[in-house]
Length: 143
Image 1 (tube, one colour):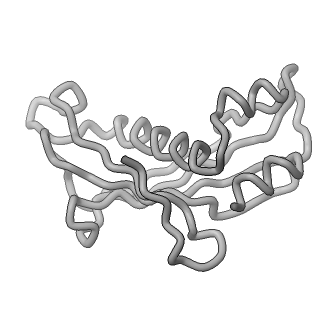
Image 2 (cartoon, rainbow, N blue to C red):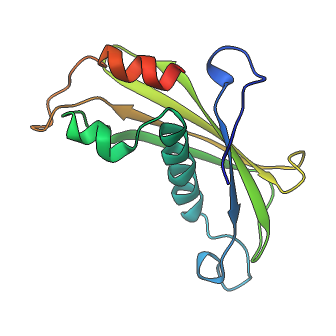
């Protein structure tokens, strides 16, 4: 279950989203495969949007799309098969026509940092043309 984080100030409000590493997400050594971190970040980002009271499907239904323009992950300590992890996700920056989400992946104890990352998303219309971030989206995601 996703837990909304309300104790932090400013843009670090965000959510905590649990994720148990499945067998199919690991490599031959039983370690979480490097590309899977971005999938886990995506799940946490979706949880953050849902915590704002809407789904990403609803955002798209209003004509706004958020394609990834940049993604980054720094691996610090491996997660392994069947580990329970927890992602802290929050909005770290707003541009005129973009939004940046940041992530920290922790072990179950929420003290052992496994990875950090970010994804920056352009704000575009259905034709793929950049548009300013709508005020309704900024207000919803800012809480």
